[in-house]
Length: 311
Ligand SMILES: C[S@@+](CC[C@H](N)C(=O)[O-])C[C@H]1O[C@@H](n2cnc3c(N)ncnc32)[C@H](O)[C@@H]1O
Image (tube, rainbow, N blue to C red; front, side, top):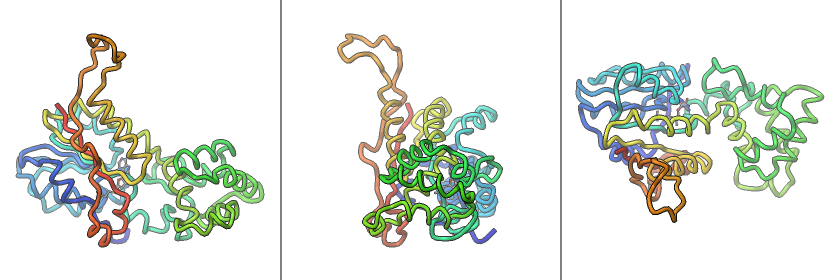
């Protein structure tokens, strides 16, 4: 395992919005190398507690090292963040704050052998948790043309999804896909010249789509946001940092539904569905990085922070 290098994005904005109480209980669902976690933990006293999860075993190891000097109680668990309700139920505790900093870390992107990057040749893997059964190669080599096209379109918003899926299915009949560069080559050869000349790398959207499918990323977000509310203390804050519109839409909608869950028709004189508001959205508009932060860390460019306060 190399050095875990990742610059935490929107760090000051996240810390301010978590409204950290020194004796509180906080969770970082996407701890990575512990960049945000360390700063949260540094603001806690020995009575405070920080629970971290990450589905990547290498991140968990790096995070354990990074947090070893903290004064507060820490638990660093190799797990999906969607298991946090169970983890909290087991320990009979509730949270004063939860952070989710979604997507992949720079460490994962830069570790060529993990297969996340279209810039480096490696086996087509893309699993955040190496114990998961399905790799990117399994998806590319076994999904039907329709299913591939749907994934590229829905998870990557790729305009050339049908052309790319058709090309992949034709190529895999000659030889199964094994590497990232074989996939990049198929994507390039399925696209018209004008699409190849765009500023964005031609494989960016398909790689994002396959990564989301391999790791079930979108259902993880909706699962946690629909189950975590009973495990938050009064006034507890949920901070979520997203990196693309699909993630952001789920967070925005989940928070709006938690604030206004009533499903009664607007002309009903009183509420009969019985669904009560769980809290309020703190960020009517998402918090975005400053120009300075983007200059210092270009990977922060598309990040957006949304915050919810639980009743
Ligand atoms: C953007 S990085 C977080 C970086 C971290 N905030 C830091 O400052 O070092 C995202 C991390 O979340 C993890 N991750 C993504 N989805 C996850 C999930 N559903 N459950 C647990 N960890 C997840 C990834 O493995 C990765 O390490």
